[in-house]
Amino acid sequence: MSEVAIVTGGSKGIGLAIVEKLAEQGYRVYNLDIVTSDKGEYRHCDMRDVSAVQSVIADICEQEERIDVLVCNAGIHRSANIEQTSQALLDEVIALNIKGAFAATQAVLPSMREAKQGSIIYLASDQALVGKRNSFAYNLSKAALASMAKTTALDYAEFGIRANAVCPGTIETPLFHAAIDSYCERSGEPKDKVVAQEASLQPLGRLGQPEEVAELVAFLASDKARFITGSLQVIDGGYTAQ
Image (cartoon, rainbow, N blue to C red; front, side):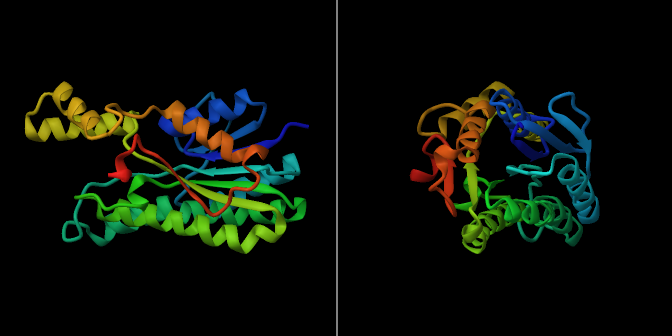
């Protein structure tokens, strides 16, 4: 029987790369997203709705009778400092980035506890380690995911369940390009110049690729990483080493 993985927000960008990589490695992969996809076993799920998340995952558990891997990837970014952050904006980021991961983790743990094994991987960010300007709510949410990985690792180690956070830096995704397009529209700067500037901020001199993050996630999901838990795995081209 194939191992079973659930990836939240698996229809685009890093999430899509993770779905494809895990499927390539033989997992039966469920993609929970509001964006329809033909990659993996797609299930429409609004990760902001805790009861919906729990219901969808309960159905998967009943169907598969096992959950081996959970990847909490779904998230949004909103540019604003703390004064510019309205309560509605803060609630929006917390609902998806934090509560979505909370709901998914709660939903898979009974199955993993019974099996005495499992790997939970949170897609945090380099912003779990360093602050960045104009990113108050997002920064806060990614630090929360790093904390979630540590506490879950400690609370469930006795059941053979591992929890880790992957902390990507600047990765070239549709979300990255949308943010750059928005900035260029406001500033009038040419896009190729702005992208080149972003790349130059990384010590390795380039942007990361979703497939590179997916490789790290697949490793953490595997038995090769069976002694790694409670860790923050940085993949940022050296940015946070500065």
